[in-house]
Image 1 (cartoon, rainbow, N blue to C red):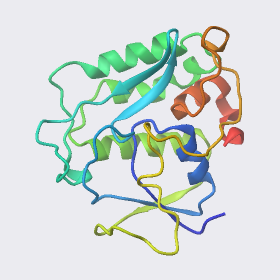
Image 2: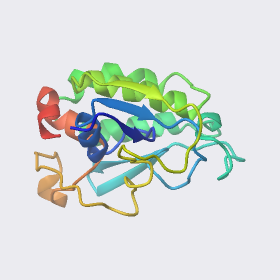
Image 3: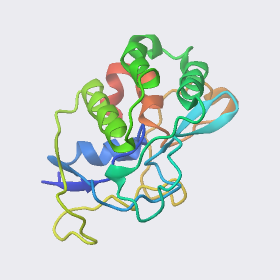
Length: 201
């Protein structure tokens, strides 16, 4: 187990993220990195009836590569919250535990949060609680390109560059139609496995 590890803050992070979190006694969250586009920081992958579906949180124009992650604002130019919640309902309504957890997630798709970082941090706190992971986390105080002595997951968990992590198989609602899809958002594991989800990490 790692004494500490450095993580970005993601939107409904993939299973791999929580595998590494579970194996870290302390989680350090990066607050000052420049916002990289097309990463899990504002997207999540779920298992829909038609296969893998990416849900993207839109950010305000001007959130370029030089904008610090803590300053990136969420855009509400269209009702993405309704779209995401409908997608989650359609994908997981027939799963074993969606109804058990849905009231915990509803506020994230009704209340508007200004900053992406705050939104993701609140979701992370909820997910750690639902997974029964007693993990404390702190925040960086400045940006450092490299950290020595601790694992750095800021770039290694990426939708376009799958790593070596192997997801332990579990039942998925549409597996009979699409096959097993590994390393989806943690909500896929949570809605399908419920209280047992933490054991799959």
